[in-house]
Image (cartoon, rainbow, N blue to C red; front, side, top):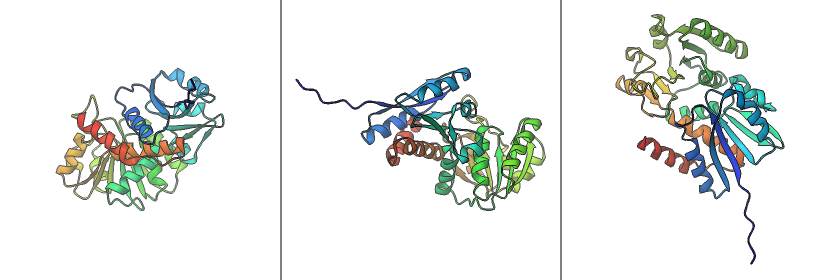
Length: 290
């Protein structure tokens, strides 16, 4: 009896901690199935000390691609052979491709964010004044995306004055074409800063589990002319988004950014067009049932 050859399975993975909330395995496995690729996408929940040795070990394996989520997007850089220019500006990597024995880092959060904003709002990044809520890896990716696409002024609002000032100083050194400012959550000046902005972007986890009932910004700071963007995708309608809609502002949820960072990762790994409609359909179905 003859047996046909079975194509070897390629693996893509996501590392982070925790990973119980991640929808990446669902949408990527749906995408691989839709284009009949013998790939499987698996979650790997690890500790920080395991990040570098794990990535190094995967160079010569059947792992072809990897996503990196909180809190390892900066830590993982030490394990990489190359980092592209945008990821270097962000100081964070969320996507790794394994090619020719090398681990190459990218940041598809930046490009996913820009694509989502262009598709879902009328915000012009050229000359834009932006307020970023949060001073972590997500904020840095968004800041780099805006700064490299013409934003004129970016204010970062964080909880710790020292951390936020240091964060902004680092951005200013890397991206000097933008006017950078920092402020502290709860400072009375934040209302005026927000009032002068074109867009307010939540880069914090405030609004997702276990803080679904909270918003990172008082509702009275939101104006009808604002474009309010919340990078949380689960739930899609956070308290910030609901309050922005009530204020008459334009809103962009985190769903589009999440979808587009995933489609770009898929294309980096496979050199094929991502089945975007399939990935969107699966994501929407999961979020409706969440």
